[in-house]
Length: 183
Ligand SMILES: CC(C)(COP(=O)(O)OP(=O)(O)OC[C@H]1O[C@@H](n2cnc3c(N)ncnc32)[C@H](O)[C@@H]1OP(=O)(O)O)[C@@H](O)C(=O)NCCC(=O)NCCS
Figure 1: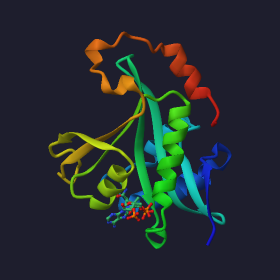
Figure 2: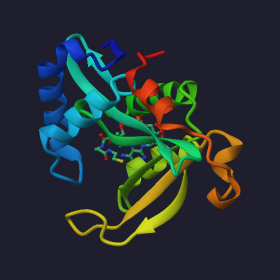
Figure 3: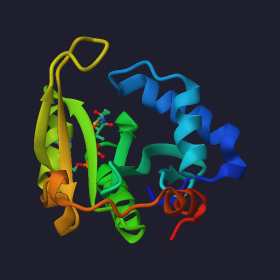
């Protein structure tokens, strides 16, 4: 089996969004509407990846990059899933690595996400890659589960409280980033 990682392609939008939607609907804690994927994929087309086995999407990672209080650039992993027949082969790790390296290349100071406090597979996966628990959100999901906010600091700025950082990220820079193609 040869699985390759490839950036999300807007020319295959209909096909890819349907496949991503099916994959994610099966496994994640929230009943995401198709508009949620479209929002992420259209706003940040250069930040999401799919893992392909031939022409079949078997995994995906959907990301964004925003200014955090104009002081840091914060990458965000909105969704990550690997088809159950393909788990345990390192594909999630590869998807996260591709997404984090790409976010870092675009200037991200940190990468964050939320996961259910009982999702031990995801907690192991992210914590083994250096993510740390930053917060716990009570009844965060519609299914009433709590969530951990995980964070991977990439630059020194990520370790300095916001109050000690000067505003440095302009809106025009964020607009440029949104339109930038993948590295
Ligand atoms: C979590 C998920 C993405 C992992 O995908 P995967 O491709 O099987 O993961 P990988 O093979 O890359 O595993 C890498 C590491 O993750 C951890 N891990 C993965 N599955 C695990 C499990 N079932 N139990 C414990 N740890 C697990 C291990 O540390 C593993 O490293 P190792 O193989 O060296 O022990 C997959 O189980 C999934 O899609 N789950 C449903 C959706 C989900 O929960 N997404 C995350 C929401 S934040």
